[in-house]
Image 1 (cartoon, one colour):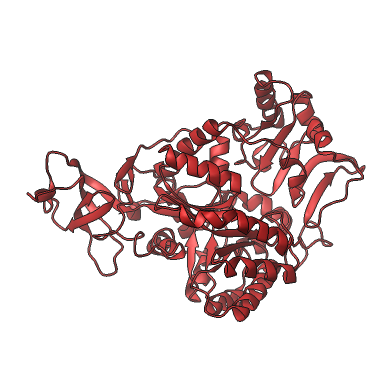
Image 2 (cartoon, rainbow, N blue to C red; image 1 turned 90 degrees about the vertical axis):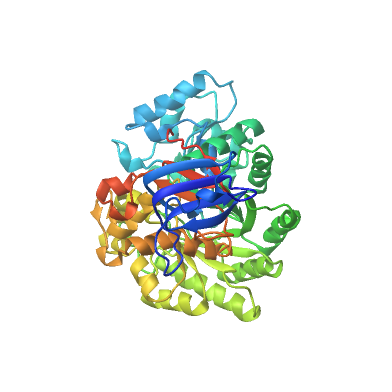
Length: 539
């Protein structure tokens, strides 16, 4: 027995370290927040066991590094912990009734918000609700219905509070929805969202911290130990800091501070001034990764080279002028921060690569992974090759494609939807790729994502099977590649002495699971820094 012993020892059927060339191990020891030793013998670390050691004897279990979700929205998940759970509705009357029930217990005049992780095609009516329908739930409260990060529907009360009328100018890069007769229908898209959302008061701090505690447990139960949250406001970051201080942040968070809705360098400079002090209060649990920009819209407004299948006069929209985006991105990198930019359609990908090439040319010597493409949904072979040549990493989100394939076929047609998130092409062309979910548009889950990338399965069948990758490649996109994207490959992503003890434990080897078994597989234990994050599955 050693003088000090380990805090944790796991004996398992297999410990897959992901260290190149290393055979599976059978035992792993942790002291503090670090891995101290591994052994191919399940009893090979017994000399680390002392009176204070927690021992998990799991002869049938498989241990992997905890996964990263490199593009998700933990803040949205935390909000949703206490918002109206409209993702449970299957019809618009059910949807409206859930809001009506909340209105009965909400003081008049207070905002009512909904969860964001739902799709209108899951409703029997296969459409979004309207302002008039939300008015049936309540005319005494402003109602904010969010679907994903790009779409809102609000009731008449909220439109009135925001001063939105039929004469309100449409913000560049945004949409104010109208019915066929020109009347407002309550829908807001992209740069029109702040017209209403600026009026929504922040949730009570204690409530938000509790939401983060719950949401972190949900992610951890699926094997995820680190999230890269891709739309964090300064106010959100303050809540994350408070959650960390309260011990409510069970998983690691790498925050991308949101510049969404901004259109000028001056606005971004103001944001960077706010961020300046944040350089000095990060720790392994919480840190600022960089700044998040959006160049085009989402499912309904991604900027494409060819017109939409549903509207031959429409090719999506850009939310920045390219010259202005060059100036804004340059402002960020000159302050020493990194940039992740949403580019979904192929036209947006082309323009973003032009923008990034100009920034790289004007700022030689930028550190690796300073400029990242988020999504790159419709990136074709030439664009993928150019990104690889420029050293631009990309984050892809197969769960987003899985959940929205039917919606997207309505906008883009089946051929383009089959080309979305071409993981095989990215890897074969030597690009740096990592993977995530884009919750709330896609469902988070380590093995749900792996299953999707290996099968290309969606809600309407297999799409683009030629873009499927292997199990080992898919796991790497969430572990070794993800840690590299965060600049933490010396700390996480593999299991080796001295690395952080971020572990996912499975009751069977995911590599030998198929179909729905793999898709729905959750962990029996997830450890972050050697601490057990209690699995919490209800949401």
